[in-house]
Amino acid sequence: MVTPAATQDGAAPTAPSGADAGAHRALVEQIDQRVRERVRAEGVDPQHEPGAVRRLAEDAVRLHDERSLTGQVARVQEPGRVIAEVVARVSGFGALQPYLDDPEVEEIWINEPSQVFVARRGRHELTPTVLTRAEVSELVERMLKSSGRRIDMSQPFVDAMLPDGNRLHVVLEGIARGFSPVNIRKHTLRATRLGDLVDLGSLSAQGAAFLEASVRAGLNILVAGATQAGKTTFLNCLAASIPGTERIVSAEEVFELRFPHPDWVALQTRQTGLEGTGEIRLRDLVKESLRMRPSRIIVGEVRAEESLDMLLALNSGLPGMCTIHANTARDALVKLSALPLLAGPNVHAGFVTPAVASSIDLVVHLGIDHTGVRRVREIVAVPGRVEQGVIETEPVFVRDDRELRCTGGMPPHLERFARVGIDVHALLAGH
Image (spheres, rainbow, N blue to C red):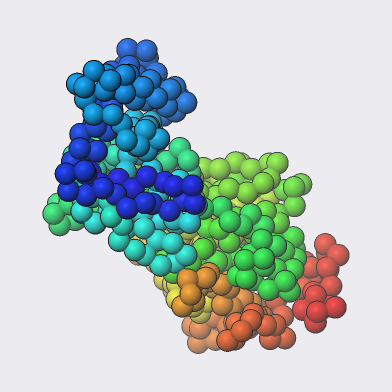
C-alpha cells in the first residue's frame, strides 16, 4: 500500500518506491500487528480512544528501535510517519485518513483499488494511493460499523454518516462492474451563515440580506443545483436565519444539516433490517414531522414521491425549505411538478402544478464556475400563477459575468415581510 502521510502544510509527500516501498510497508505492517495485539490485550476502543492507540504505536516504534541496537532489525528511519500511518490504520481509516484530515479535500472516491481520487476546490485529481481489495473491504466494514448501516445482496446500496460528519456511499460489486465503488463526501464547514457566503464570494451582500429577510418572513425556499454545487451548505446558512422562537423539524436520508438553533429536532431515514422490516422512508419522516408541532420544516433533499408530502405540508401554511437537483431554477420547478406523480396513479399534474406554484415562494439556483467556486446564479420569485400548465416566475437576482445583481423583481407575500417589520422595497432598492 502506498500511503501519503500528511506533512505540516497539509500536502502529501512523495511515497517511497521500489525496494524502499516494500521495506516501509513491511515495517508498518509489523508495527501495526503489535499495536493491534496491545489494543486487544488492554481493551482499548480504537475509534474512541485514538490517543491511547498513538501511545501504543509510539511504544511499539520505541521497542523496535531498541531491537535495532542488536542488529536484528533495521532502525525506523521516519518514526513520526510510521506512527501516523499505524494510528490511521488502527484508529482511523488507513490510507484515506490523510485526505480525510486535509481541509482542502472535499470528496474522496475509489473507482478500483488502484484508483483513488480526491476533489479540491471543485476539481478532481488522481492520488498516488494504491490499495488492495481486502484493504478497501476492511475500510468500508469499519466505516459502516460506526454508522449502524449495512450493505449486502438485499441492500446493494448504502448511504451512511461517519462519526466525523462525512457521508459515505457504497455500491456493491455486481451492481457495479468489477468492484464496489466508494464515495466519501466530506463535511467541509466553510460557511455557517449567509454572511459567510458573502465573504466567500458566493453571494452578494444585498442578496444575503434579501434571503435572510425572506427566511424571517416565512417564505418557502427551494434550493436547486447540480451535485456538489453547495446545496446543503446553503440550506444550513438559510436555516441559521430562522428565528430562535420557532420550532424546526428536519427530515433527511442521512444527517447532514448542521446549524445553530435552540429548538430543532432532526430525523433521518432507516434501512430495512435483516428480517426485511423496519424501513423508515423519507416520506414517512415528512408525515411524522407534522405531528411534532413544527413552526417550520426542512427536507434535506427531495428525489421522489416524498415531494408530494412536502408540498402538502407547505400548502397547509407551514413554512419550509428543501433542496433539489436541477440545472436551472425553471428546471427545479418543472422537476418538483413531476416528482409527486411517482406517488401513485391518483396523483395528476392538474393538482400538482398549481400546488407547486402556490407552495414555493423562492427558488435559489447554485452553480460552480470554471474556477471551481460555488456561486448563486439566480434567485427567482414564484408569484403563484400558472398559465397553460407553466408556472410563472419573476427573477429577483441574476448573476452576470461579474456579480449577482438585483433585477427589480419582487417576491410574493409582501405582507409577510411587513408583518416582521421589513421594508422589502427599500431592501431591494439598496437603501
